[in-house]
Amino acid sequence: MQAFMGCFCFKKVKNKPGQNYKDPLILASETPFTVHEVKALYDLFKRLSSSIIKDGLIHKEEFQLAVFRNSSNQNLFADRVFDSFDAKRNGVIEFGEFVRSLSVFHPRAPESDKTAFLFRLYDLRQTGYIDREELKEMLLALLGESDLSLSNDMVEMILEETMVKADSKGDGKIDEEEWREFVKNNPSVLKNMTLPYLQDLTTLTFPTFVPNNEAEIIGRNS
Image (cartoon, rainbow, N blue to C red; front, side, top):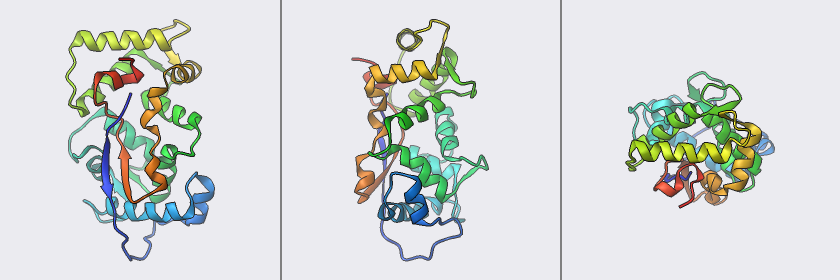
């Protein structure tokens, strides 16, 4: 599974920190980001949080506009990504949530964190495992956000192939242990879970996980 990146460049803005601004020293101590990187992320946060509603918070419409280039289309995948950032489950993303969630894409973030993030993304009903129906729902949502058009037969083939590889216990679902083993054997699943430019911050981008071609779906081999 691969993603194309929705690019957001930023400029330094000399505004005073808003009420949701968190101490860079604290956020740097809790994440792989340096203090400098946290300060740079605040510039991006200000840009995103004022793109539609100017209240210093990132609303779902603003998040979708940044990541998916559309603020109104409803999509399960877009909702799941937003929910993963909205740790407080209050319908908005505060700066601390923004930095902590984005930190999983940092080059210094452990692969185990990246693997766990994807598992939670696919575990739609939060049952502690991913079943075939959840996998299908997410695959169709991914395709809905991409330019790919696959036949029903191709979708079913991808699903079957993934379940055969990942469901090593043969019980029709993928638990966390099986998921970790699946990712270990199919490292392309994490290909875009690392954004090298989070250490550069000249140009910032958001991960979108949207596949560019069939070979990039669910770590599928070409």
